[in-house]
Amino acid sequence: MERREFIKKAGIVAAGSIVAPYILPSGSLFAKTTAGAAEHVVFVLFAGGVRQQESVLQRYLSDSQGLVGSAYEGNIMFNMLNGGSPSDKIVFGTDPSIGLPGTVPIPKILSSTLQSQGTFFPEVAAQGVGHYTGLNTLLTGVSTITQGLRQKPMYPTIFEYARKYLDLPATKTWFVGNGIGNSIPLLNYSDHPDFGAKYGANFFAPSVTFGAQGETYIRDAKPYHPEEELSPMYKLQGFLNNTFALEQGIIGGVHNTEEEKYLIKLFIKDMFAKKDAGTIAFPSVNDNGDLTTVGYGCEVMKAFTPTLTVINLSAVDGCHSNFTGYLKSLHRADHAVGHIWNYIQTQIPTMSGKTAIIACPEHGRNLMGNSILDQNDWKAYDHSDVNSTRVFSMMAGPSIPSNLSVGSAGTPIGDIRDCVLTVAELLGIKSQIQAAGYIPSGIVSLFDRI
Amino acid sequence: MKRLVYPMMLMSFCFFFVACNKENKTQYGITQQNIYNSAHEKTKLKTDQQFISILYSNLFQKNISQAKANAVEQLVRSIGDKTLAYELVVSDFMNSPDILIPDPATMRADIPTFVDNTYSRFYLRQPSEAERQYFINFIETNPNITPELIYISFATSDEYFYY
Image 1 (cartoon, rainbow over the protein chains, first blue to last red):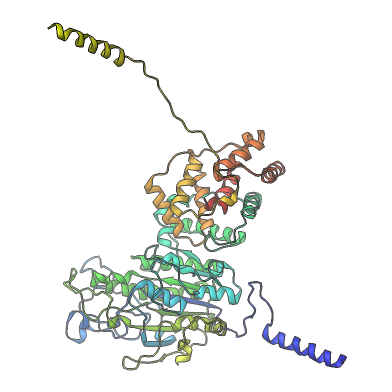
Image 2 (tube, helix red, strand yellow):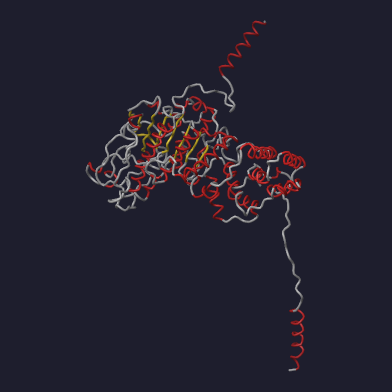
């Protein structure tokens, strides 16, 4: 009888140890079971609606403006894509001191393109043709028509998955936005009851945080002493909060610990000092909002070495009314990505060689132009038709096959919803996210598409 | 003509006595009222605009301009951790010479009154006896604590986000 009881109890314990290895401080039952290929992932939301014709297909002015001849075809994304540049009507570069504007292309930063360094998916399906829908889909892996435009994501974001399943503090996940319009600040965590603010990412919109508003209202914020001043202040605040007994994190967005808050305050101080000194890690050309955003994004990565950094670029969307500006922005978005990758490899030793990068547009743009003509009499392009659902995706870094292209215009492979599970696979949390059950069936990691 | 004399006399009489009545001046004022008996009566989250306007009024005892409120609101939206953002904004406000805040000596001269006034100013209620005693003890035993730090703790506390 005793022996039978022993066997029974041992069986229960053994079963329990299989079902629940141990409980993480986050409350998660399952610990990370798969070692990720990368310690850090940088995910670039690229870059406000990119037309396949000017990016992957390298048609420059051929498809869009009806100019005929190889001189009007070519690649303007020197750091991301292989291919020679167009030779005539160059407008996407910087302005020379003498001569026509935009005629000096920005020199390539990377010695080898990301396409060569990693795996390229030239024909991927976007979900929807709106910016917020697309960005939401890239970050949640889910596309749903019931998602409101001024509403936080309904499904957990990759930030929340990463923080929950890797038990990360808030300062290890960052979302660097291009601004505060178009609901961008809502994307750092979802409304989902099992996830939400307590697993959200830190967020900066550098154009505002370090722009005119930041200059006026936080630049001179008093640097209180962490032990003599901030510690008693937080103690009082803790007492007041305990009295009110509200669940932590509900009102204050993302919750950082006192130590993390202090580090972020020091970072902000440092940014204003660097701004004055002209030493922010901007790309060599820094003449639009995306490039400024990327400069601060690099500073965030250097200061916090996040496990997951997401950077949103959007200047390309100027294509609604100015095609010349669109070409310039696309060329600069490529410059921005090249700068990010180069900066990680050369300026952040703790991330160099351990970081993967993924870039994917939230959607494409129309096949046919609208009626707006720019200074060169070139047609502008909106995003509303089937051509707008054609995008690309690429990734590079540890364990990612190099010089590999998967799919083609005739054989589309991949979906922008795959990005979440791709990041997850790189960080070693794919199975947990799949088990959570919110990613639709049929959506996989890009690694599974190879 | 005679028929007009009496009415005219009556009218003159009315004009003289009615028009020259002494005016009683009535003045209206506002007496500071605490509108909550306890924290639990506050159930609605302030919008960022409401929060910023109320914060500014509490610290400066005057209204914030719409342009300034918009700029601060945009700044707060640009930072993911709202309490952190407000800590920064409040500590920046503390640099202003216009801020109305008691000096440390005044606070320590009458701590119970300071505590009551601070609760009233930020929370629109009086502290409970336990709250009052906690603050009195805390201030008495912490020489580094200043009205400025206490104001920041109130202005960034959970209850202050609610009404």
